[in-house]
Image 1 (cartoon, rainbow, N blue to C red):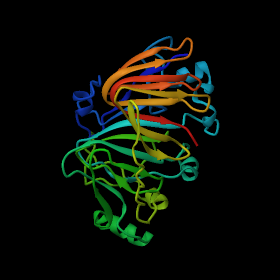
Image 2 (cartoon, rainbow, N blue to C red):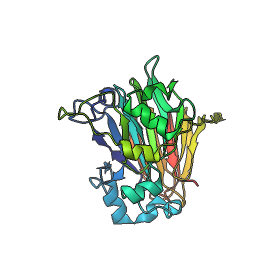
Image 3 (spheres, helix red, strand yellow):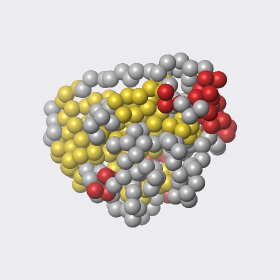
Image 4 (cartoon, rainbow, N blue to C red):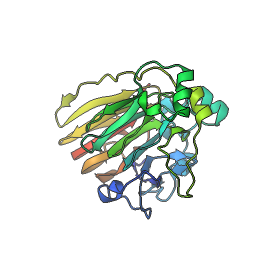
Length: 323
């Protein structure tokens, strides 16, 4: 059984920049790299395995070949691969948007809805994002502000700093602002309803499609809840901080100073996304492999891989399915 280093899928949306190429050494021919789908098993994008016996297969092909047990028993409740992990470089503002919940998305779009979490990897001084409404709003007022092009007057603008965390439940109006680099952990869905797009046009020279009717149906009209920050827990060799915990994913930030011992047991696969630094992942059980990692790398550790150690100096996003 092997830990797998992954090659991401790239997206060149109009608001993207060049940081993923310049700073994270992403190999891509696009002029702009808006998103790198680091852990992806979706019809719109798949990670490719870089190392070992299954090199060259997509993550979907690997799971089909070896069996769903590599996801772990906590994933039995899902009909498909449960999560999608991205790096997002917002050179410009993203559209104001919303994602539906599971019931609506499965009925209307044929895939799961999208609850997601944002971790601010880096940002320009003074950068901000949109997160819910300033106060309660009625559906009629919401529609009125959309029609009158005054939506930005009632949405909640939040200044951000490196290390901030936002939990975006399905139904929450949101938008990443320009100058922000984000690690996003989300349900495995690509359904987004644009509400407002700053009057921009796409590569075809036409205004980008809006999805007003659907957005009005699914948007939660209450202010976004404040996120409860969990304190950092210090260990010998590393510090760890819980970023989010929900039925779809549990995510931690690990500041690796020398060594940490982790475990991919029968319950869940593990995902390691390296935001900075470098090191080595060593499987400790029999017939387990080792992987050298550096800034920008993404590693999938299958369920039942067992205990493994990560050695080095690195900033890591760790994700599994724990609930």
